[in-house]
Length: 159
Length: 258
Image 1 (tube, chains in turn orange, yellow):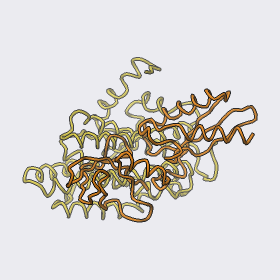
Image 2 (cartoon, one colour):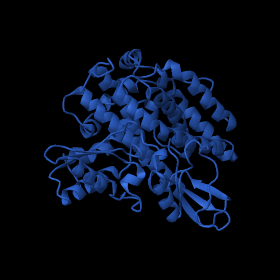
Image 3 (cartoon, rainbow over the protein chains, first blue to last red):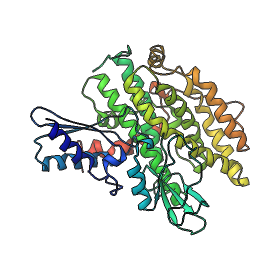
Image 4 (cartoon, chains in turn purple, blue):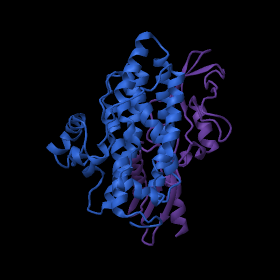
């Protein structure tokens, strides 16, 4: 049933992240697979960003509800660790959305070490400083621009 | 589900996952005790994040331990319904938070160990252990970095912060020998290639700790009255108090949910 599978995949991919609602599970690379069985039962496989990400159970609920609302009779959501998620799974669209929300995306894969300075998403200055490795959610750190003095969040590299 | 690629027995897999999972669970609880008590807001958030990562690792490891055991115990059953003698964590991680120097020293000693362990484990022969380690090693790197920066800042800071760091090292160093004392289950898991032999990471751990201490104007105590037994269920009295708090709700209200 490829049409049903394509629809289920698209619906699941468009579910917003509960903590960063401007990003979808598809943008974040959290959605791993969608399979539709013979009787229309959907199996969705998610992978967590961090081991302890508390949003995973919310995501599972949201995916389940979205698919049931669309008429799929039964939905099973599983999580899978391997291969481990990393920020290299973020697509260009996710990075663009972060920038539009004044959040600094992680450095591109293989380009730089973790500690390189970030560009301020407000004024573009490179004179920025990390205030804390750890932010309001597991995937973010907290920074401040030394020129415009505004704080900003950074979706930190994980790899 | 049980014996797949690796030839590790279900009993040994259960034991190994319990040892690793209990380290994470107990340290996670200790770090969470800082919530609302941390010295500054950023640190409050950082410690809670560390605790959350470790709790996530504990959930995966204890679920695996329960699955390997095959007696229907899930992560919650293992976390909330075992007594202190059944816990397999290192004595180091159950030590009380003390002051901030003690907490950061404990974190440095443990995260350096966990990072090396997970790094090797992630290419091990037991696919489920390897998957948990591959995820956890990325987190352990951040924990180690965080602890290292604080140890350097406190060690090389004021006279008072330096004094407290020395005290913290004296207090915790006796628990570090246990990190490299494998249980029988661990030895067998290492023989099967599922876990690294502890002797294979001890040298790297010493070098890593030595380098941080040197850059922090600190040194390891020359001699310690070594303490061990946690891996075999012989714990300090501190664990009993920790478990009383952690398990109280579940035992008073079995199957409570909210």
